Image 1 (cartoon, one colour):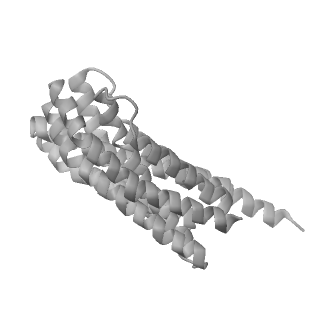
Image 2: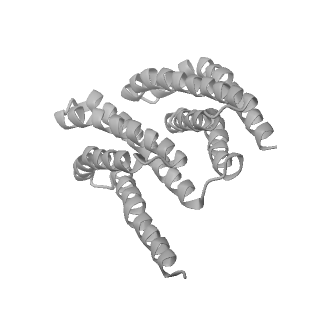
Amino acid sequence: MRRTLAVIMSILGGLLGVVFSLYVFLNVYDLQIQAELSRGASVEALLVSYILPLLTVLAVVGGIAWIVAGCGFYTGQDWNFPTAIMACIISILAGFFPILPYVSSGLGFPPTSIIFTVNFLFFLLLQAYVRPTNIRSIVLSLLSGMAFILAFVNGVASTHYIFVTMDPLYISLQPLNFIASAGWAVTTVGVVLRMDWMKRLALGSGIASIVAGGPLAVVTQMELGRLSLFWPSPLLAAATLVVMYLVGKCSEDSRVALISTQP
């Protein structure tokens, strides 16, 4: 039953990534750019013209990874589960980020939300049913996954400010946001697979998110006089590190103490 479900999930994930994402791109790309231009958002239109093709390619790559994972599930290969997790992570980003400019353009229901929602559910199903992990791993993978997306959002937001202001601060910190995002993506895979190196990578990714997002949040908040949208990434990164290191250490210490008191 689990194997059959995994194969069905892989087929759906592959179709969404390879077929549906290309269909959406071909039908909304020009429409979305025109919608941005019609409301006088020329910088946003320029940004969309670069970001949407990139995310569509990521969605297709995620779909291909799903197809590969499906072949692995069908033939019983050991690499099927890690490949499916990677397919989910890629597809979640590719489905989530286009929602933001689509909604801000006032175009109605964002079609890539289907890719995001389905892959998010598959991400949970893979861990809860196909190859069950514990609740701690699921929570940590969700936290690191959100940190991955928010760091990417900060990277794109930095690009927007570069187009508008050419401020050296944004130019210098923009790549670090994308590096932190990539680090969190790999960390999420490591959390699910319970790899020993994932805590070290999480620490580096978290510090990168804080260093890259913190100064931008402070500067934009001072300039705008309101809460900066750069804050969620560094704050979530810090919270994830606290959960991963402090809460995780406490639970491990409690387990060791419990074992030591047993006769």
